[in-house]
Amino acid sequence: MPSITGWYDPTPKGGALRLAAHSYLPGAGDPGVRLAGLRRGDRVVLEDGRVRSVNGLPPEGVEGGNWLFDRVRAELVYVPNLTRFLSGGSDDPVPAIRFRIEVRKTTRHAYVGVGLTPVNGYRWEPGT
Image 1 (cartoon, helix red, strand yellow):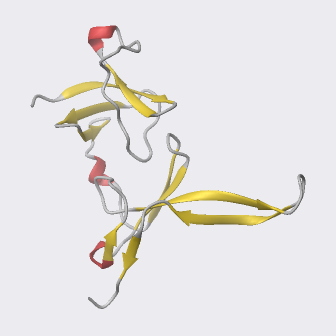
Image 2 (tube, helix red, strand yellow):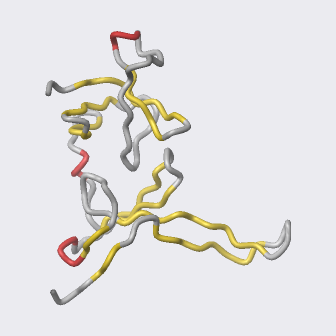
């Protein structure tokens, strides 16, 4: 399957790749795109439905030990240093754990904290 290049545009269902054939305006056949850290206007190359590069760099370029915020999904993403201990997790191109951020409050105006809830099941097994 040939590669497809376009500009990333966030949508209510994640994001879409806007194509030159449609003058970079929304079109019926625009492919969907989901990847942590994409911003409106990023140049994205898709190959076989997977992101192969973002602004000329491979998406695998995210270094371990980093936290990212996926603005499209409104999720916090952690890319661990020691990915060999991680099983399960997300469908991202690099091993990662996705979290939903929950603001905890007692009343309408009183906040007591923030919680992180895993989006996908994962296992962390050091020593294996």
